Image (tube, one colour):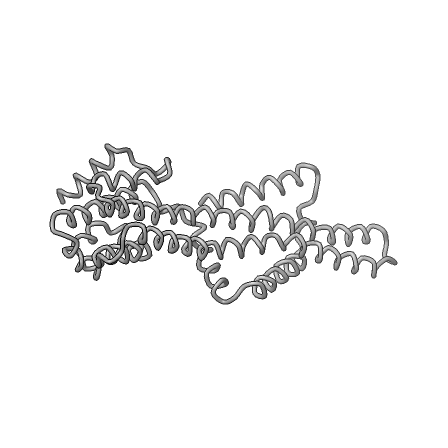
Length: 286
């Protein structure tokens, strides 16, 4: 929703200011300029990215028009789930969760938290490291190193759509110049026409540069920035799981281990100690 509102503000500011200054908006309506800029940018996007990057970028675009799913409620569910798992381990031993981590979607433990269970990436991450803990063959340092490597891989993979869009935006002003140059070439071919008509052709040519810059910095560039922010939010989930499980491996009680995880969250979504404690008590009573 904010993306659409932002686009409206951009258009209102740019085109509204132009109109208030006495400009004619019809002069900016140049479909062929858009065809040249859009077609050139799309072609360069296809050339500069492999199939995986293109697929990832196209899949990420719809998410830009949705609000963030990483809310305080989601994090409280995640930490309540971690508390339940670690409490079961503390009471019944590591082997007691083997069935839960092998089939999370059929586990009564995981089923209590549908919002977390819906995110199969974080469930897979959690289950994999709980499985390593069950195996008992790795110490906390080895698991932490492996977690860091996986989170780093997740981050680099998630940055692919953002980088692709950023490069696309960077190239649009250049394609705007190309469109403008083509317009100038057309104008120079028509130097024999009356000055009034010649002025119109020059104006049409300059619109190409304007559109290229507007599309780059008003439309495409901000999307790349938003994708990067969404990636940072998703990475915070992994860091919360990592810190909590490592605290448990180092011998901390479930309540303290979950507190470690709470501390790594952004302040805007981080529940207070009392809020989390109350949520855990309510989930235990279900």
